[in-house]
Length: 250
Image (tube, rainbow, N blue to C red; front, side):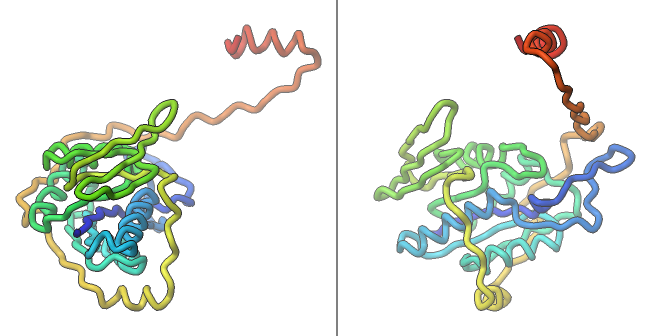
């Protein structure tokens, strides 16, 4: 079985986000970029399935600027076999366009399973996996905290409000990963060196007949409001009064 794992180049999770002075977006100049953390989990899960003898090849795909090749190299160093880079002009590609490109890649590669992060930490859209499943007509298991193959099907334990839900999907299928699915490994130095020799096929959105022109316009980006400092109260009665009349908590 071949597994396709889309990965996204995003602002590193440990970077403090700064909004541009004109409010047109987030400042990306000289900012550390890394693989989206949810996609790291997806890569790790694909590698574990391969190590268990349940998959034969892992293909990683990324859509973005030329620098996104570094993100693919990270996945290759973790254990993926080859990559596909779909180069764009640098503008953000919306989830629907991403899903259309991934559908074209899936049509060409014919994977038995597609695993991707449930969302990217830059836009938090949580849309690509669902849109891709709709375009392909495949079953989907989102927010996966546990995955197990069962013959020609896959059992996916989903994190839902108030508990867990287990669904059985007939493959080929789409799985989107949640935080508790696994702990991604660090790439070893030998594997990092080997990754430099693994192939990355470069394409463009036009090669797949997809128009990446944005359909949405970001009107303004602002910082969240500054949290007010706390106050000390002398009595329980004063505390209750403030909670009731100022905070509206009771």
